[in-house]
Length: 135
Image (cartoon, rainbow, N blue to C red; front, top):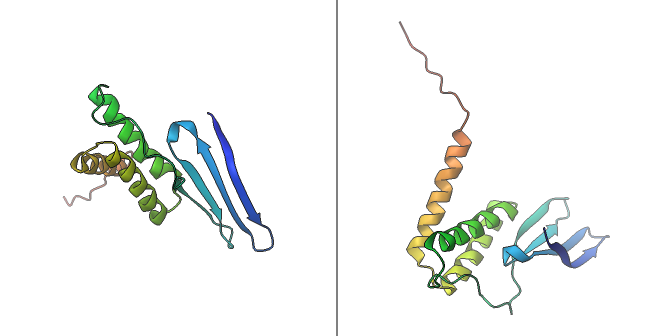
């Protein structure tokens, strides 16, 4: 994987650390903050001057490729975000990027709903349902 530390800032007296990791395949950097209580907070980060370019929805690539690009971006946003607030922030960044590249809001909403459905299936997978029968 071609990831590297883009920038690191730290105050050891206050235990505040702010780092950015960049991965070429993400289209984003990952912002990492170390809170005073030792908690790591992570979420997607994008420089303000960065162009909002990715695979365009109107390109001549196969539909499956364009769809999977969007799915992978949402999955990455979910994986790198450490809590629900950061997940929401990261998801909004992906929404903005994809809408800027011609993806329809209804398609993006469907992708997010399918992702939530898969999470519920994974959570319930392997659990046995036990019922009590009175005989």
